[in-house]
Image (cartoon, rainbow, N blue to C red; front, side):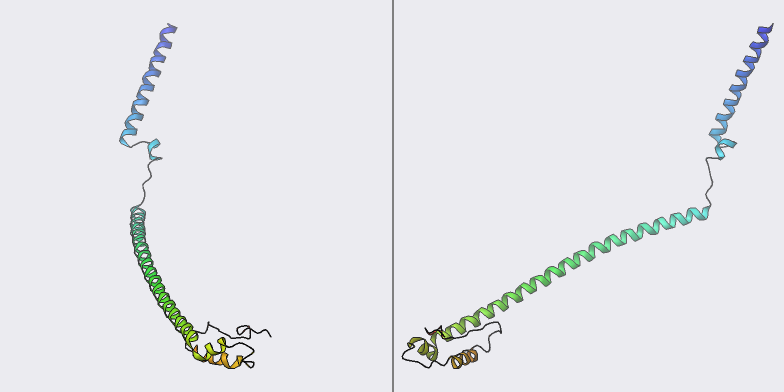
Length: 162
């Protein structure tokens, strides 16, 4: 008899466990019950709207900034290339002008009678070479050329040493 009493309690325990398990599963699936309310928090609608609007605004601002960055960088790159091209063209024209002036000045010196006469005569025949006078004459001829050219005639040029 004792065995049957233990068996009956054992069966009642299994039935009770089955009932408890069945009620837990139903409560879990239906969303009711004290255990599931801990995992499901209801967020207020204001907070949901605020987060949603903030997210949308953030996306719009990010996309706009990326578009503006791309357009601005392209415009700056194009302008920089244009300004660089213009500078190179101006520098090329300036170099052409300077080279033309230097060529004209060298031809003036090469074919000028006064300079050729002083260069052709020997120091013994022409003892008093006017170095200052010839330098002034050369400076007068070169006055329209850029200031970076300096041509000086010295006594070395005429075969004499000081």
